[in-house]
Image (cartoon, rainbow, N blue to C red; front, top):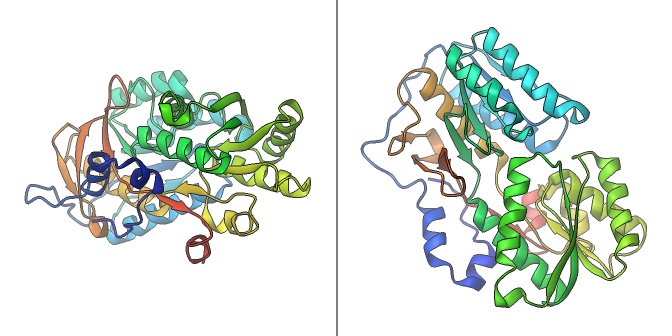
Amino acid sequence: MLTTTRLPKSLLRLGCLTALTTILMAGAASAEAVSAKKGETANLVLLPKFLGILPFDQARRGAEEAHKELENKGALQYIGPTPENSVAGQIEMLTTATTQKQHVVMLSNNAGDQISAAAEAAQAAGTKVVTWDSPIPSAKGETVFVAQVDFTQIGVVMADMAHSMMGGSGEFVVLSATPDAANQNAWIAAMNEALKGDKYKDMKLVDTVYGDDQSEKSYNAALALVDKHPNIKVIMAPTSVGIVAAAKALQDEKLCDKIKVSGLGVPAEMVSYTMNGCAPEFALWSFVDLGYLTYYTSYLLAAGAIKGEVGEEIAAGRMGNFKIEKDPTRAAGNRILMGPFTVYNKDNVEAAAN
């Protein structure tokens, strides 16, 4: 069972008791859960969108924790492309892992459905593909997606954070990662759906741009948004790189009294911007836990203990039990729902950043 029990303020405000129960009960115990046998030989590859940012390093830490805990006799590789070459790089690395006959590639997809052909070829060759953080939209070539939280709820939380900072009215913009990032696109779509509600009728999303998860490009994109839309009240950045870059840009230009930043960020990187009022509220989940759960899932698949089918339940060490279900956020594909996520503000960000 997950130890993090902080509840998103948006869920409390909306009274979404059903959604909340789903999140909190994702790890509910069951006697039928499949436990991992220690000491198997499973060669696993952790392939993030790209190297060099803190959330993916944290996921690596979680995977390494599980690798040691399970006494895996196989190898755990952590490889990834550069941000500038993420799409082609991921496809090439997945293809290489397949020719090396790796048992499972754990993929945070940044290539949309462009990577599905390589994923299908991998599966056909005996290399399973488990996605985490960001799935393959069509689910082609994917065995199962380890979802950090329910994507629909992320959209609601972003809408609610914007609503809170804007006082319920005005213009705001989105600074996303890359146009092909399946998770980013799903979160933005969910937010747009939430914005149709009467609560948000006085809010207007006027632009969505992409910083490609590069700090300098995101920084410049944030400033360009300010110039283009002088009346905006919030920059919503559902990316750990973009949210930091946007907050720094507004701080440097002394605009934090006029415009706020929100989205998804790492407490250790956001604490100063939250405390000085540039980013009063943002959200995230544990990437360490996400890497840990993804590793457990992949190890069990490599060992043949599970197939990745709906209804299967796994015992994931310190995190408890999780069941594979049909992914309700996509037309196809199965998922394991981790949860929960936390909304950070001045009350809790400093403790989380330590």
